[in-house]
Length: 231
Image (cartoon, rainbow, N blue to C red; front, side, top):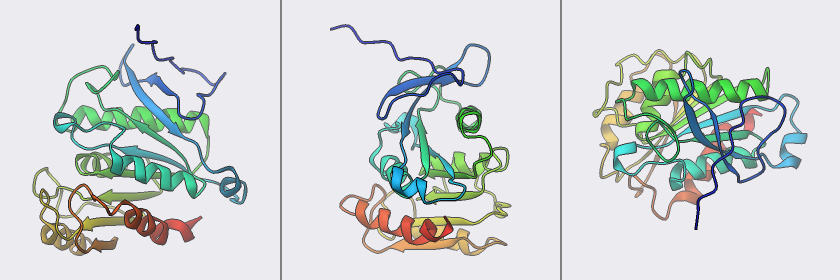
């Protein structure tokens, strides 16, 4: 059975439907990125004076990370339930996104392309930026260029990538980390977060591993507790 090509939404004339997998312009001439929009809960969005938009970054592409990752999906769905129209996207070389893995450099460009698309469709909206694992590294690396208003890092691999001692985050931000993370050392993450000039809100989830198996509801609750009152 032939695969139906994904539709490219490269102007403001139409919007993708709920749950549709689609393409957006990538970084560079002719490049495209695969994406999916998590539509905000209408009642929640209607109650907001100036509802935000969200962009969520998935984990490491070379270790199976895609926009369908359950942690990235949980973050996006939580944002949507809070009234935040949210875009998940595949980094270059994943799914239908063009290009090859670029060790976090080109992936920041992919993030900026996703942010640009959302800003074109929701001009003036505050931006909530989030990432899980490798995606947290990309989100942190690109948050200033993206002019994010809030930043969420879930299980950031601070010892595996070049996380600066002073991350220079000047916006409200939050770090969520599992105490029993088998990939990212929890104590290193908490120590790094607490050393920041602007200390983030920190949630250390007792008994949770890197992928939050059996703990996604608690993850969702923590996100709501951290940012639900920011709306």
